[in-house]
Image (tube, rainbow, N blue to C red; front, side, top):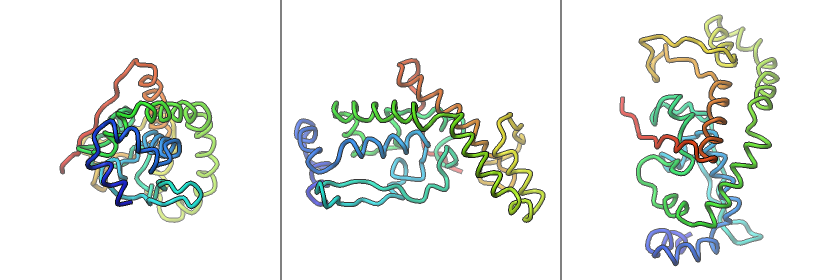
Length: 214
């Protein structure tokens, strides 16, 4: 870990590109980052340097990343942009502020190729709106009754969250208030899938997110 930190911090670009694969499983890290980026999971090392585990694989003797605490994934983290901005967030500059590690990784051509391949595969097989909608509807059916038992207010917001038609947002709603807008997951999934596809096809550059202050 210390040697890897030294490489990230001090190596020149040529040495970093040549040696990073000695410490890091590039393909697995490409998949990890692709998943975080697709989910717009910014309560993570993309923005705050947290909510992940770094582990040493005993088989390969290389470092890997495990995500943790994804409760504000799917574009729901209020400190780095609106829901629309997170749905359109850049796939090639997904970090917020300065991030020396990811900046250096994205400059490695081999890694960019692996990362792009992972995004393509995930869009084709897993991050498919119709597939995800079916999973959401199945889970919603299971938990609807317990939510209804809590209150009519919670049930109403739950039904809006899992619905596809656009729900009008209150004019005075704030992201961290009790009347904050309902986060419609299906709308986010659709918008995110379109945005990532357009960025991969070179039709859009996406949005580089900035931290919001309240």
